[in-house]
Length: 366
Image (cartoon, rainbow, N blue to C red):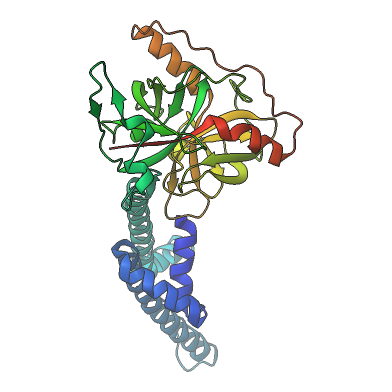
């Protein structure tokens, strides 16, 4: 919840301006969030103090009016002050009220600022959810991985463990190079990828970049055949605010489509290496490609804000180029050729999805 909206909600709650349904919902939030409950308590105290001071001021104003009236009617008399004497008189008379008002104003500012900072720190640290799905009820076919059986010269058979996590990745080179998230790879000692036909292949992590949360995988399974003519390109430049986007990923055991728009040019807390996009995602979408209507990959899904609907973060696609530069600097001599032309441009969305499905993989491991 935005801090300004939160403060407004607290004020409406204390003033009794909420509907019964809103009040019930807000009180439920208070029970589950100590920071918000404390904010309500502090605001209640401040309102009572302000109300008390307002009553005192109103009472004094009434006495002053009565005094003036009695003076005008000649019932009582008082010396008329002027110049500096009048200023000194007014200061002595109202300095306590001024001091109290200034103290309350300062207290309101400090308390509100402190609560907002505290609330933002808690939300900032705890509300970002990585979109890796934990596989609790693994399907039988996953336990019988096609890539989990390796025959050697003496025909021995080696079985790999059943995967415990699921995410998404996509090819950037048909020879078997896949981009996904670093936080996905960090959860897995053994890695497999599954295509949309249900075929599994073993893979290894070539390089990870925690700063941009990207990782490069290489399919090392002899059953994998090189794929040609990747239909999309990788965008090197920044995209525009409001640009329409779509994504494909594996929050389920089948590929899922989502569409939305680019809602901010930076990621969480102003991260310049990422975008904020508005799209529906779930655990398993981590590592999924984000494409524009031209069929250019502009980002890679990384995480979402669990306290706000549709607030999703995606690493910018130009980070893929930096990732490959880092791979070369690390001494890897592999030649990776990124797709440069988009075969999706000009196609309707259904056709774009059909051409893309073969190149987006489920990433699983344990």
